[in-house]
Length: 304
Image (cartoon, rainbow, N blue to C red; front, side, top):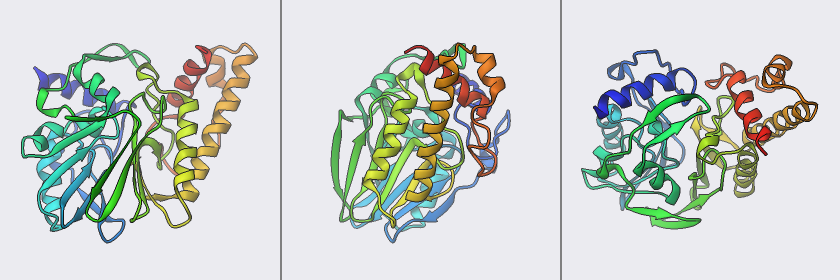
């Protein structure tokens, strides 16, 4: 039953929720390949079927940030093995969504320790819904083996492979359980879904997310970075501080335009017709449609 429900969720995701890669209504995981992107000498990014995975390799073994889907775990392990990193010792979750954490179970069963935010564990423990997209959708709890065994409230530092990896919580942004991970020595930030380099982000407002929090998250990432910082986004290509700045500015402009229309008494349909995000994103095909993004931001601001 769990497999059937997860498969249904993945198909729903294809329709615009947490889309990444060239998904179809019936995704064939066997055809999806893992692409390894070298970020620094010891940090890599894996692109596959879900959220981007960060990898730290070195004398202490392997640390992963996010785990994608169970159907991809063997390919993830094979890609990691080519980096000669040793055993996978830790899996850090940027959030609880399945395209970032559904591989937890299989990796934990091989000995990895899963770490996430307090609220992400809470969501994983209980049935979840996403009413802003489908009021009938029911997301089952994660199995026990997939749950984080260490949780973070605000911050945590891991001393691993000669680096200091700081877990940073930004409240009520993409959700209420987001963690970004900053590699101090390597000067790399894995943002999870706090930052999409390929277009408009998904904001899970029913799980505590907000446009204000997303802007605050972008500003936090900017404050932690410099001109040489490499940024691993939740979705999209490897990025940098300049692109995060443009993303932050896009979020602010979109919020201000939508808020102005709401103040004028416009309905959601009228706001959508006004196309407040027109020309804000020019980087190619966005995985989250402008209409979907506008709808969520409208719902968030209108409830305040």
